[in-house]
Length: 421
Image 1 (spheres, rainbow, N blue to C red):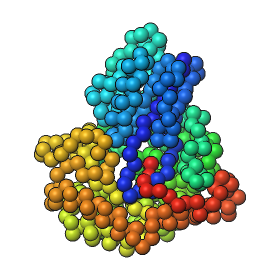
Image 2: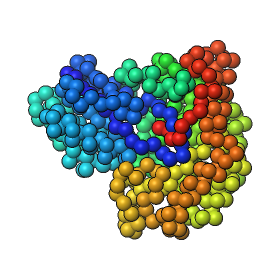
Image 3: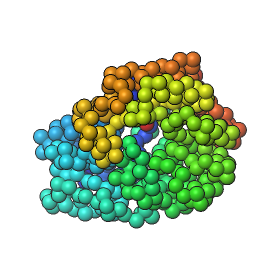
Image 4: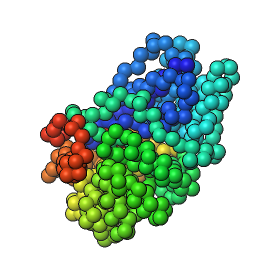
């Protein structure tokens, strides 16, 4: 069976540096397919879809809300040709009802142990419109190594610079943050993979640089410490979402190769200032993730926050505006208050104001988002700051004799204008 797996393109964030990471969802999904399935993967952000290619079945994997309208367009083309289409991925789960209008089947949930049934339904012409496994999650131990062999690796080098490979060590999240849909997508229970299996997968990735994409590593202290201890011999360098803020955990993370973290900066408190300092004291860089437009954000607060970010010497910062994605607290609240201005999903990239802020006009919040980007990077561009992070990791790799000579020169890091993360 020839199965074409497509990752739709989308417009990247304004103001951000552009590079492309190998997508995680499709390669994890591909690992759940039986051996008799011949998978061709197309990342439409970097490749062109051949709609005339002979194919038995098409899968469309959508991670982001800004992918859904393009995903529907792709499906409509194939279905007009008589080719059946199944959708999956995070954005499919967030937009299931609309997506069903453009599909032969939608898959909701985690795919391990499920695909034999669905492919049998396909072969016998009895596909169901919806396979809903959101609340019926597989044993976490079933997760095997992702199928990175389906990727064209050369596409994910930016001007000769090796980007990170994505991997996960857990699913689910015990937190339930206001703008986040993870509690709906993966459940409120933290579900760690067996550490030996997660570390074995990391060891098998032919790249010294990883992005551990777990929602947060700071969910179970003992698990976190055990994971980092087992990662030390790998001599990998990695970025992740937050790490627990204790000296023991941070020290183990540094020994395990922590390169930098994505850390939410939500106020101008001494707690945040000291937390960033502790990361830096352990040799761990910080990319601040800055969400603007919450109901307690005034114009004055946003300007003070940007000044604070410069004061605490973040290595990088990424600014977004509150975006009410379906199945979040933000969506429920703003819908109830009739404050959502549009459901044009192409505008839900977290860089467009799609709701009525409490203390200002949508236009003014949009202007303040642009102000934040320009002010933070006024003295030193994002490409220079990013090049410094890559230089640091290359120097560490050279000291450890783990440097892989794929990076022709860090001077190649004259990036464009948006990022694919």
